[in-house]
Image (cartoon, rainbow, N blue to C red):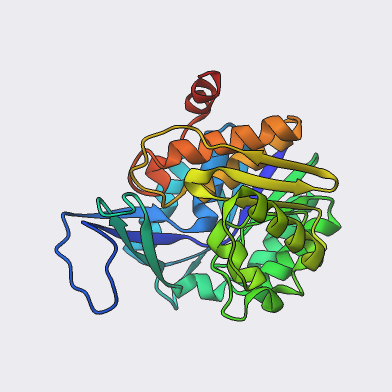
Length: 315
């Protein structure tokens, strides 16, 4: 079983603030960090730390930030042969503010500068096609929306043609909402938005687990995707898979920073399903990975290893 992540690598510039700023508000922060991130890289690292053979396909600039990111991902055991080094564009950056207090401690705001991520294209798709074609066994492809949509569609199409299961984390949601992603839906097997992203895709809001479950069913009907999972942060998850439905409560952890929780969930889900875990167990396994990622600051530094997930599951 192999996990492939096709997506972004970003250097995260993170500052702690007493609360998330309002428009026009200037805050005094308490700490600044430079951390490795990007949804593509995060999900690859998440899967590798949980025990999967993992390859990352993407692009960085030929700058110090790019070298730092490659070293970080390789250090986690991820194969980076599919990461292009681009000498014409800077490495992608993410500016992240994390609340240390207020009404939502641990919540964050993120602004991206795509840089080299915006140039991920046919070369990376060709690499993915070759790697999948020469790698026997079942495969799982993790994709997100921090690289050009056309490249994501091409990658998902290639993966499906080679029998891989495609998991889409639809972040960030396009301004046009779900209508912008109609060319991608046919190639996706599992859709994993958080609640805000799901609301952006459907163009409406809701409250409570039953309404969230109905929203997941509506997303499945609208997109034709067989499995819809809406992650709801401290409220757990809802999942619709054909006639099966789940409403699962969260693990009780002390949340510090939610930056990479969704990435940990997606990496954990691919690993669990790839190992043949039943769906109810795989969902809890992925939830445990996501929960643990919120207990430390940063993105890749916060992603748990397999033993931590197993300890949380044992209670």
